[in-house]
Length: 246
Image (cartoon, rainbow, N blue to C red; front, side, top):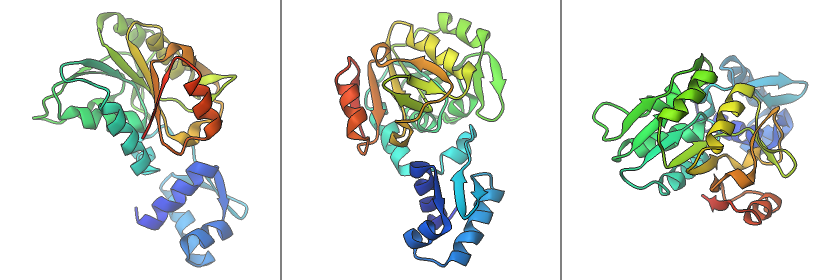
């Protein structure tokens, strides 16, 4: 993926959609070039073409999602990794920022309880980190492990911190996910002892997905980008959860 394609995806991630004219003005290339770019991004499964523009295609495929706002997600992951002490056992759920967190922690002496096979594979041969993978229903697109068996596995895994992903947050809905089984698993994690954190790109705040994960009262902290809208920063700061801005 070239830099122009990455910039276009970042714009779509922030606004949801954009016109061909807007993308042309942003990148400084012709309308014809933008249309060709959009055709290529659609073939690769990143976007869907709309009349006169494009919209970001919602997908659980972590490898594809890593290409969108990668630097922002990497900053989130590195800040989250700084909250983990050597020797700790942490649970890492699904999501692109969580996958980057797993890679940051792979080079340290920690134990990772993974609820996602993509996350587990971020620990490579020779890395000092150890991985325990929960069982459960396998979701091929996201590579997540969910369902009753995954939730039962939580009883056997003692961890001091947990890191969850999400698809949306509003003051009314709390943290939500479009996948009900992921939301159920996240809710089970948030209800356990230990510090639970949400890792999320700031563009997800203000959206509402189908299933509730938890509320701010269930969290030790939220890790997101420093461009988080003031409205949501104030809501988090007024709660018991700490706000960590990358």
